[in-house]
Image (cartoon, rainbow, N blue to C red):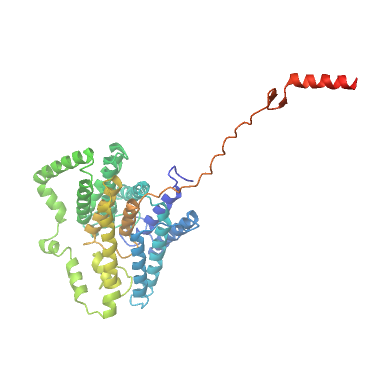
Length: 431
């Protein structure tokens, strides 16, 4: 049931259920049509199971203090306040309930946040399992996995996953696998089993946000190890050299991949995102909506996705939500900078910087999402190791000193000679 470190193995199952919940219910068409109600039942059932299982593992509700979870709880309260007016419909209250279970499960798991790498391994294994289903769908039906609807970009056709989702999962586990190999927590051969196929899937998604987030995150994370790790210095040097050669020799192919066949006007407007952002910012709002937002929704405005975490939070949770999101990002970043160089710190820096980079063109920092799960992993890596409890040891009994004995005696009594003499004397008296 428990690992050598004292963390139950079932904690990894709880983490996997949280990942399953954040996969979402909307995406590409699958080979076998899956009703959206069925997908929502599976994802929500996974969250309820995660919460109940975490409660079984932690029945006394022992938790660790966490500034990230505290601010996330305040964001939940702000979400409930904004959703109570039902401007976004009854669905907003359901999303608040989902966020409540999500945050509650993280609080229950915080008991085992000790700055170790156990949760990193769970993160990599479960997301790699998700990518295995994507690769299996590509092998079974390449046409469905690379549909024209998404411009030939890779989608999940066994479970509905969009190209940005696949790109995010691939980029995150590539970065973590590289850091684990640099920190000698795994071999490069084992890391390559994760890195190589994940990189192929990332390239097939043509996801610029995930690619740039991976580059920025690895540069900052490896940079934090350069002064203390020779392996990090060698890897950084070789990576820069290879990147320069690739930029010169394959500049045309890289530009084609980066543009994805878009026109210059479409690219400059961030695939139409800028138009949605302008409409959202110029829309009239009451003071209450500006402060608390309109309640948790589907991260869209006017029927179009917002695709920006900050604007999505502003729309749904107002300026209060924006302030809380900025606060927990600043807190995590500040703690990471204050920690001494280590592999756990480098992994946390990678996750934080990736989420910040992706927040510009992806939504998810204000609701139960993979981004909040990435940041929860970063918080677990930055947690101080639990101090051992000093149990008082009872004093050892003092050794007893032998009493001085009379001549001719032993510890058991008179000596044999004295006993014989006394017996003889007694016999004479009787006679």
